[in-house]
Image: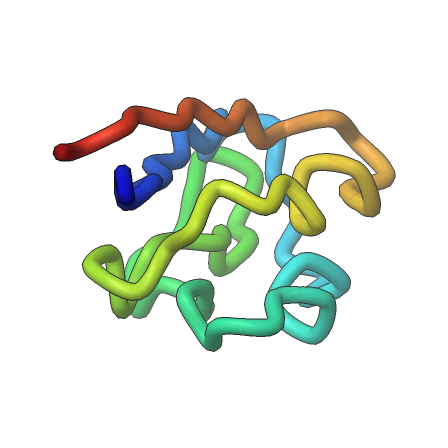
Length: 75
């Protein structure tokens, strides 16, 4: 059976650090970065990238559509 692994692309300059995506992730993949973006916000980042299943809960709930999810099958 193929395993699906996900990865995220986060537009860090548009992210305002609201943490809605962090709370919605069932796998605990997301967290806020220590760094700030150009607007002074701590932006979302993948802290446990290997645990991402590509469910897209974060992208669906993001109010600013900053997250794009990609899925890849592994045999």
